Length: 193
Length: 252
Image 1: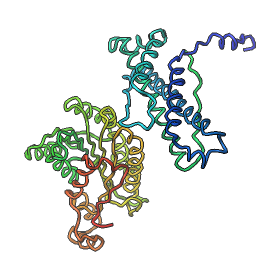
Image 2: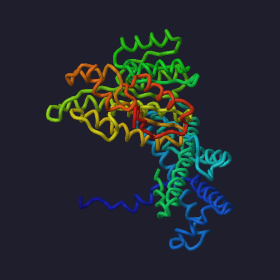
Image 3: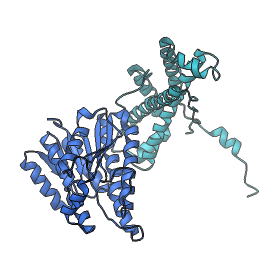
Image 4: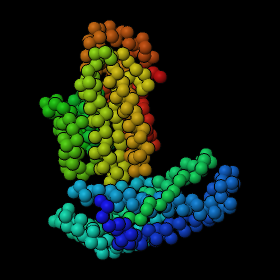
C-alpha cells in the first residue's frame, strides 16, 4: 500500500467534463426572459416591498434572484433527465418518455425556437460523445439508430429543463404567497465524461 | 354520452361496485377493460356489458402483480390507443382482531389495496401523461377516512394509505391534467357487506335495521349510487376536482 503512487493530481487533470454548452444557452436566455417578463409586468413588486426588502436590496435584484432560481431549476432539470436516461441505458431499459405537462406556469420562458435551438445544441454535443456512442452500441443497437437515439435523448433533456423551470417557479410562487424565504437553488456539480 | 370514446380500466370489475361502474361507464359510451382475479367472473361481467351493447375487454389478473398488470395496460393501449380512466375498485376484507391477525392476513389486504393501487396508477399514469389528460378514481374501504373499526386494522390502514396515495398523486399528476380522487362508500348493499354481516353473526335484515338508524337518508347505499359518483369523477365535468375523498354514505 505504501508504494502506491499518488495519482490524484493526474487523475483530476485527465478528467474530461461534459461540454454542456446548452446550459450556457439556458442560463443566458431563460434568465433574461424571466427577468424581462417580471420587470415588464412589475410582477410581485408589492410582495417584494412587503416581505423581501431585508433579504434583497432592490426590486431588480429580487427579480434577478427569482430568475436565477428558475434557471438553476431548468439546468438541474436537464441533469435529472440525463440521470433517467443514463439509468435506463445502464439497465438496458427503454428510454423514458418525455413527461410534457398539460399546463405550465407563467412566464413559460421556453418557446418553440429555444426548444429547437437547445435540441440542436444537445444533439451536436452528443454526436461527438464516444461515451454515448458506446452506450448506444451496447444497449440500443438494432432498436434505435444513433441519430434517433440522441435526438430522443435531447428531447428528454429539453423537457426535463422545462419541467425543472416549472417546478422552480412553483416553489417560488408558493414562497411568495406567504412571504416565506425564497427556495434554495444550487447548481449540481458539472458532469464528468 | 358522458364518456363517449373513453377507455376505462376497471379493477375489481367482478365485485358489486366494480360491476356497477363498468356497466354505467359502458352505457355512457366508454370502452371498458374489465379486470378481476377470476377469469370466469370477468367473463360473466363482460357478457353483461356486451349484452347492454357496451364495448368490453376481458383482462383477468392480479392487481398486485406488476408483470400481469403491465401486460394488460400495454395490450389495452395498443388495442384502443390509450387509457383515459383508471378505476381502482379491487378490494378484499380479511378481518381479524389484532391478537389474531396474522402477517399473511395483513399482507393480503395491503397487497390488493395498496400495492395494487400503486401498481395500477403507476402503469396508468404512463399513458395518461403521454396523452396529456386522465382520470383516476379509487374506491376506498367502506369506512370513513380517519375512523377505525374493530377487527379491521389491516383494512382501515389500507384505506388511510389509499387516501395518502390519492392526495400525493393528485399533486404530482395535476400539471399533466390528470385528476385523482377517491370514493369512500359506507354501508353499501354488496356481497362483501353481506358476508361481513354474516361473519359478525347478524342476519342481513337485522344488520340493515341496525345500520339504517345511523344513516340520515334511511336506506343502504347501492352499488349504483357509487357508480354515479365514479361516473362524475371520470367525466369531463369533474375536471376541477382532484385529490378529494368523496364520502358516499347517505349523510354527512
